[in-house]
Image 1 (spheres, helix red, strand yellow):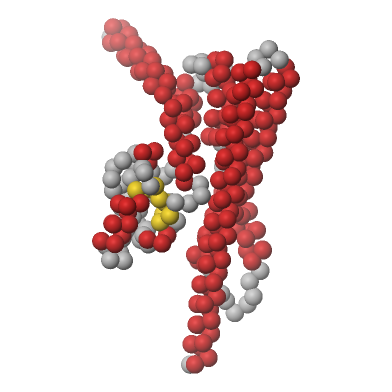
Image 2 (tube, one colour; image 1 turned 60 degrees about the vertical axis):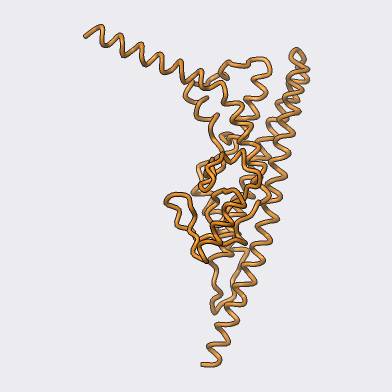
Length: 268
């Protein structure tokens, strides 16, 4: 009995150390992703300046294309880091030591491959690349759809973002207006820091996420302002500004539908 208890204790200790190490590695990885996002924003700004200054110079246009190609490559790297972060978190939360030694490299590689296989996203379809192309296009073609775009595509891509909720479920304020936003490490929902910490304290250890239908139990130490959060909120602000003109598109679409309905009524 004593040996069994000691083994169980060692197993729990190993699992705890692994969780702590995974948490540190996850945080470092998120910081790398945040740096990639910052560089994407910088590359977009440089591309816009080049497009604005070199409309008639082919060399400048070539540099814009090179920046776009570099952005695609950078987004591919970001997706790889994102998959790795998800695996780090999953293994850290769920792994339990067994009687045999674990090959962690193989475990991580297998999980990353599985995630990539399940993912249908590609750098060419990434919302951030869309933002890059739209920003360059709008330098000389503001208000015009990009070649090959349909109106529905413009409306859809203008409203995409990586944040799960766009308002705090407790204060009701938009995420972009929160003074001190934080995100749950478990369910990824976002809240106003003061409001969520008060909510967690009031529930005495059984604070279920206040977002409707989310079953996760929140812990104060796992509700944080991670490295990516503020960047993603800034991206959301940027997308909201770019989407400001899409209401016109939606209005025209509604007018077209109304005209068709009127024509059908007249025919009847």
